Length: 301
View: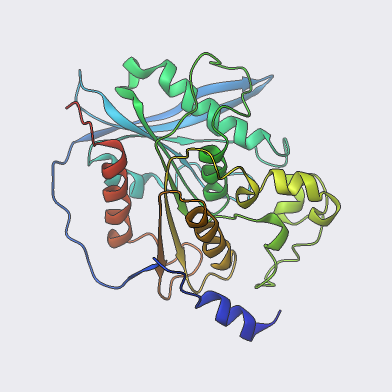
């Protein structure tokens, strides 16, 4: 790895980049919430996929939906570790459904993307049960979950596994925390993993070495999607000291979205590593402000 090149790549400041240092105060209404554990939303033979749902305790009201994808290098997820942080956002008036995906031990791409979209359709199908407004939906994820969130917003109407097929997978907003945007360049600026090996996280996702699956890897990479069509709004947040997914991944995603005239906001978090330093009140406040701007413009409450 060229450490000097990695340093300069991390310090690139494309026009419009915003830097976080200070604190933001939060206002507005807070709701008491309930946690609904292990709700089955899809079955594949003996495999049941679950949702963790956090929802305001306010019967008769419809709230915006945020489907969250827990990062895991596309492997087996810790389905419960994000619940405390997600609860802070749910309390601001959102139904949050954290989705279990088929990991790469069970299925390769596009199975995990199909699962995220299936979860969105399931929540729309059951909007009355969970108090969801089906017209106000966002997707949010970190790391590999950030990758799947980007892919969800960029491929609306595609990758339908047939479950709840009459429902839409459309989203109004995408939140990407330090996600992968280009599988082909993932190892360009960091060497903590051998990204060229078949047993690397992205190799397992592709079912073999990325370099042996160029076209499939492009198909699975957000930067190579059709960015000319109407897309949802994007919030990208990445630490400039990330040793797992270099911040260049988010810089390049931000640049190509801007070049195509898409609505995207990018925050570089100074000193933050891969997750460490990102999950703080300041970033969560910015995330909720972004969700509010894109999901509560026509608030019916």
